[in-house]
Image (cartoon, rainbow, N blue to C red):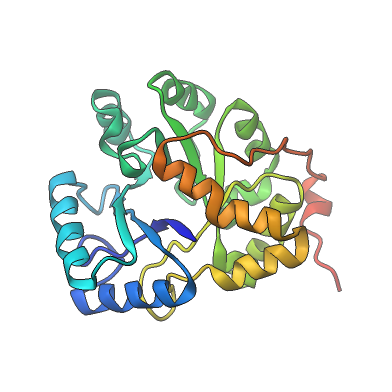
Length: 255
């Protein structure tokens, strides 16, 4: 499997706090069946994103852990004026493995009203936005049809593996399955930050997805699509998103 969203590089953000934690995360990932990890440090108002520093950290960690898992570089790209200006100057600065796919994270309490135009600008630079963990975003939970609209524009969606297992609460759990059942998930990823509460694991979520939607879908979300992404190729599995139920019904929990 390939994990396209993981905060494994030590000392860069709120992920691995030191080298030993990063090494433990790498070992856990290998035991779980993960062969490649995209290291995605935050780029936001709290953490400076420096590709040269990231590359140096990646190279050092790769040497320490050996050949597996293979570590690639990306970014947890937060929407800000500074980031959007930087990506206009150098579109490949923040992308997964220097290709065209870009992880995009919304703030919990603010989604810019001009998001369609922001996405069109990114498309115009040859980039493909991957919206990260929308099932955990309070604003998108209230208006999930936005997600389908953005997919129809050309965006992709990554859901956190732990959301399928209830580790981010009932609403995120329910939302993850609704997105899955309406063909609005293109990747699962760990969004791991440590080796304890936020570990780099995908296998259990993959098994849950296979039980719900079949092995072909589970393999697409954890293997085929992520591998295409790190290679800069079109996704082999790209279903047509289906309309969602109205929000009131969408989040009614079964008793």
